[in-house]
Amino acid sequence: MKRITVFCGSSSGTEEIYTSQATLLGQTLAKRNIELVYGGANVGLMGAIADGVLNAGGKVIGVLPNFLRSKEIAHKELTELILVDSMHERKTKMNDLCDGVIALPGGFGTLEEFFEMITWAQLGLHKKPIAILNVDGFYDALIVFIQTAVDKGFLKSENQQMLLVSNTIDDLLDKMKNYVPPTVGKWINKENV
Image (cartoon, rainbow, N blue to C red; front, side, top):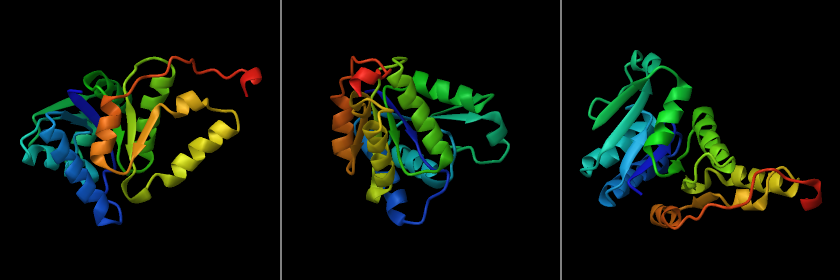
């Protein structure tokens, strides 16, 4: 993997561990010579991961919609800042630039971006590893919900297994490196439930 897109909060959250793990993930990416692709902001976990990569000598590509640039949240020290016209164009560009995706803690925007990437994988639009760094159990309830979707027949277990999850950075990156995409299609037949 040469580049990983990270989706995460533009806030720092209530626990210091969220910021420290974002920074550590950035440092680890740089040490592994993996470039960061992210949303281009200097605030919250977004700023922490970018600074982690940059301070460790790595490269960071930010993708920022023009309307957010006017809010003065653009990170000024990035290797490259790509300006786009819409949120959808931002996600498309971030997908085009990366070899895999990681979600750190975040809110609606993080979840929306992350789920669009895994949906595209489920539909066969790409075969990239999609992962959650489950910092301090932040995504535990989401993981339970996804299991409920499998149990109730709305998600195939093979598609559930597309989602890579770990509490530790090195383990997660190793899972992503060794990821093999499923060969099963998305649609569930009543006979298979």
